[in-house]
Amino acid sequence: RTADGRVQQQIARGPPHRHAHRWSPATRHMRPPLLVALLASARALAPAALAREALVAYRASEENVAADKVLARALRGESSFTDAQRRVAADVFLGTATRLRRYEWICAQRGLCGAASDATAVAAALLRARDEDDGAYTWPADADERLSATSGAPLWLCARWRRDLGEAVAAAVADQSTRRGPVTLRVRDDVSIGAVEEALAAAGVVTERPPAGVGAPRA
Image (cartoon, rainbow, N blue to C red; front, side, top):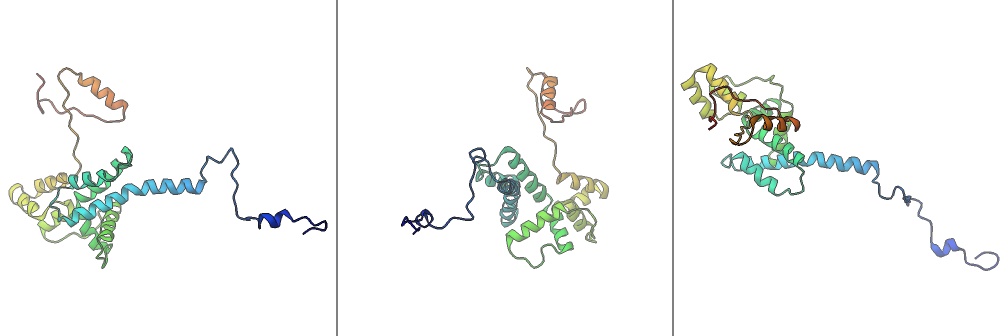
């Protein structure tokens, strides 16, 4: 009590909250910079996490399920992804799955997987091998195994290509078989090819017409 008998308001209200943070009306709707940074980081990590889990599922199926089907199934479970996030996840996963044998060899060479038996840890190591791939490795001595490891194509197929096509052609075919191919568009007969090219160019898409005589002729 005070000298005149009044109860102190401080005691009635309780001790002050020293660490309470007050937002002004002008900044109440704004997020703290650290929270914004964390949210941006989480959004950036989300596609990589999905790619990692898709790679776990792909390896668990022993590659009996096509990579694009594994990816489609994984993306169906992430309806909140933006188109940009879906593209990143697809690029990371398919870029690793199509050359899986190459990245498995790199993991073994660099000891990235170590003694890890956890499927998620192995998948993360394979994605890391893809990111750090500089080509400076000691490849297998056997010609078929070397072609399979460098290109990522199956061993049995590399052996057949070498047998049927010869060394140089087999190497070129194996390398291209695991790289992303071009997207082919067929323009309807009632639409101008030039107009389609202009529209795609405006969207930042580079197009190239096939050589003369290649592809379906226009009616």
